[in-house]
Structure formats: C-alpha cells, structure tokens
Image (cartoon, rainbow, N blue to C red; front, side):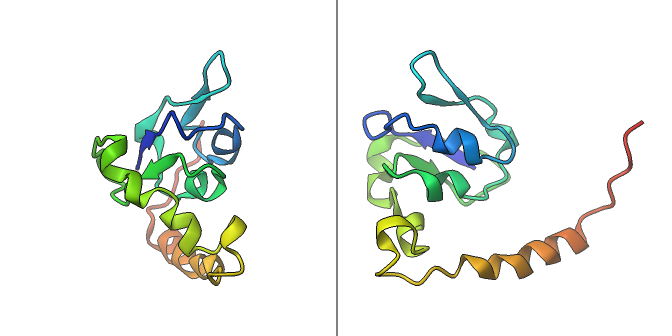
Length: 118
C-alpha cells in the first residue's frame, strides 16, 4: 500500500497521479501529489515504476497501512523500479514485468463474481 511521498525528492511531474488505476493521489495547488485515498491503493507499484525521482514508497502489504518516515525507507527508494529494469536501469536489469500477466489472470479467476450495479 502506498505509504509515503518523499517531499524533497518529488519533482511534481504528475506521473504517479496519472498512472494510478484507483485514483489514490490528488494534486495540491502547487501540483505536488498527495496521498488522498490510501485505502484504495491496490499495491500495483505503478506509481513507483513511473516516478523518475524515486520519491514514492509502496509497502508490499496491501491489507493495512504501515506508516513510516523518509529516513526509514531511503535505502529502499527506487529499488522496485531499478530491479524491474525501468528507465535508466533498462540496460542493467532485465524487465520481466510481463510475467505479472499470469498472476493477474489467477487473481481474476479466484475473485468472487462482481454483481452488476443497478
């Protein structure tokens, strides 16, 4: 679940706001992202992948928040993007994100059916 936006690293580009499939973020008056709906985070890590400044920290626990501070997560910032072979890391690490397709298919198969809204 999204836990932190490290203010001094954030270059308000809006990438995290744009890619979030559940609209977890809002932009403040200066264009900086703010975590507006943390409970809606599905822990997809897209915001971390698309953040060129490595200013976001998503905790792998998608069930409950784990409040943290910038000092505690600084060594982890950018790790997911780097190890996924995104951006400047494309030549160093192999991007194997395509493998998530099978995991998403299994999750859809196990999910309870959604009843149509009236």
